[in-house]
Amino acid sequence: MSYLFIEYPRCTTCKKAKRWLIENNVDFKGRHIVEENPNIEELKKWIDESGLPIKKFFNTSGVKYKELNLKDKLPNLTEDEQMNLLASDGMLVKRPIIVGNNKILVGFKEEDWEKLK
Figure: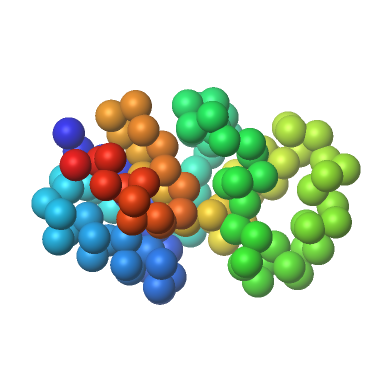
C-alpha cells in the first residue's frame, strides 16, 4: 500500500515524519502542500474519513493563521467558509497529512503512525 504524504518540505515536523516513513519502509508519494494545496473535495473526504472536526485540519501554530486572527474568527464561520479558507492556502492546513488504506492522519504522532505499518 502506498500512501499520499502531504508535506511542507521546510517544516521540521514534516521532516521528522518523512524520516520515520523512510526508516519504517512505508511506501509513500510526497506532495508539496503549497504547490498543490488540497482542494475542497479532498478536504471534505479526508475530514469525513478521519472523523476529526474541521478545526483539526487548521495549522493553528502557523504565521498565516495568526496573521488572519483565525483563533477568534473560525468559531463564527460556517463549515463551508472554513473549508474554502483551508482550500485557499496550503499554509493554513496542518501538516503533515498521510492518506491511504482507509487512514487519514493529521500531524505527526509516532504512536499513531505505527498503525501505518
